[in-house]
Image (tube, rainbow, N blue to C red; front, top):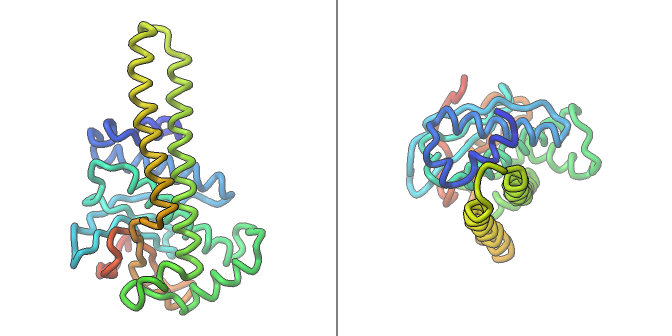
Length: 240
């Protein structure tokens, strides 16, 4: 699936009618595009049933560095693509952080890379230890900010993509076109305004790590994101 096709899939009315394989393909296209923009190799996006609510926590996704796989919780695909969009971008950012630390990509801010390296080499704070410190540690603070910023940009690109489709359409009457696209634009504006309000108020759903990063190369290292970061992912050996 191409990136522009995935933008169409991320419309809420379309997303809820896709099967899991189609959703996985759309998220893979998003990851491929994000990787290209970050000058890194794309990760494989795989759906995996990580379960539903567990002690008030909803796991949405997880990145493992040993196999470079972004695991997306198929149980949490739901009818809201916005959460999955931000999740796959957030996890891809963790891949970028590892690549920067390990010298596979050039990150301009060397001090930030050093902070990421120290954070990943045994100084990682799990959500159970301290939820506030967890969100404010270098790798998570960066991934949260990047995920929100890029998800908003993707939404804006969805709107532009829709506008281009309207300009190219010639087989439907102008009144039908305007009615349909005005409705879609209203939807995108509502989403963008909601994201801006959440960002300004700090009311952003939590994303948390699956396990603490005991070492940079550890096969046990993984990042996850979900809602209500009250519980760490207890699953073992995902994707291994």
